[in-house]
Image (cartoon, rainbow, N blue to C red):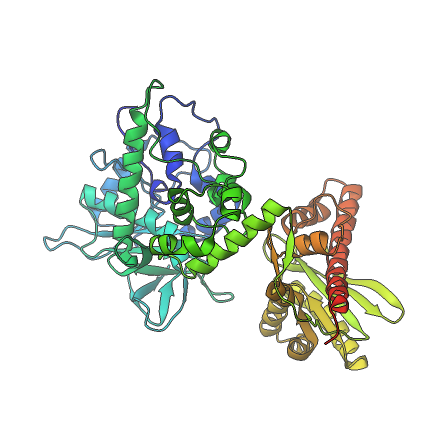
Length: 567
């Protein structure tokens, strides 16, 4: 490998991956390193296909996508793209931009939209990507964004009081990569904008394009002189790309004999979960490494590198560190993060808990005081992988004991069918509230209440509207009480708190929301009646255990309050 060529994911990806890819002393993994595969597995390919197919209907659009199962040479696709660019097509879909060997780049944007042409009249283009998540949010005084429709992508208008979600920075870095490729081949627009189609649409509406100014300074980054600094997407990309290129060049020089230490070292990050290089990186990481052991609310890479530079790499080292003495050296180097001091203190507390073998730790002394009632309902819903609620599970507790009730449909529900099922549950709940005015409904986080309000608004069902009206005075979010009074080494999810704190155990060996979605699919589409029935029972048992776990956590908290000395 004599020439270094980096794709659009390099600047946003772990630099250790870049090092391993270009290190000739390492055997390359057999698993593909195509980051786009992960997005496809997460449902992104369907959304992308939907958007690009709609975009292809724009007047004059040139669709260069290769049909599934068909293979076309890269050079042929590149030539077709250059021809469409030269002809000034208003929209080009699925093109391949020419390799930029001098700039060390290759890339395939989802689409190119004609923007502002150059003064001499040659066509200029904006790159566009499709991502299966929201990319913007309301905000007064945010840097200007623009928008256009898929039907007429070139007709751009302002998008006031809206900002780009900066934690989606990775998508922007991909787009800047394609912008640099357009510059290299002479087809970049006269103004530096890029387009991103996220799932920001209102209900039943078509997705729209969000246009971002690459020169707008809104990305908060580390600054040695000021702690943090706002930089543009162009500045952010150029910095990250140059570093990856330096890493690749250093890796290529390795021979396996008397090599200097690599420029980068492995740090456990979220990306490791799907990275083909993890099996290479893991043996290089100490078993007590902070990035490996503190997995909930973890410190980011710069925070971890700062600690490493201060001689702290493991849980044992952080657990015994005087945080007060550390802060003057630590805070100036981590000003890129809000609440940097609080994040360090939280990590240090978790390190001490890990070192002491403590899973949950109480952080308050006063009674927690979860409100109780003679008539109680613990609520938990289950959703399919498309977000449709197919199961409303409730554990009713009164003087006679407990009983599990559920409203479910094991089928791929349409939106009206989802609303009908929710209405059945709502009428049951409203009737209970009428019979028991002191009713309390317990849930863990706001997942259930969000869905009740959303379905009430969408369907206009009077019963759902009444159920939504109960939320303020009758619903109790148990997670809020736990969050305000405990710290958990592995977070404060229901599974952790119920098991580690209340001693509750699920009947299923692999309980989890994502797992339940696969069980639901088996219950609906399984190969036999027996398989479908078994999967259905598994889902119902799991849901019942979830609501019983919520009850167990309430009882555990109440028992702790009873142990407090009387005032």
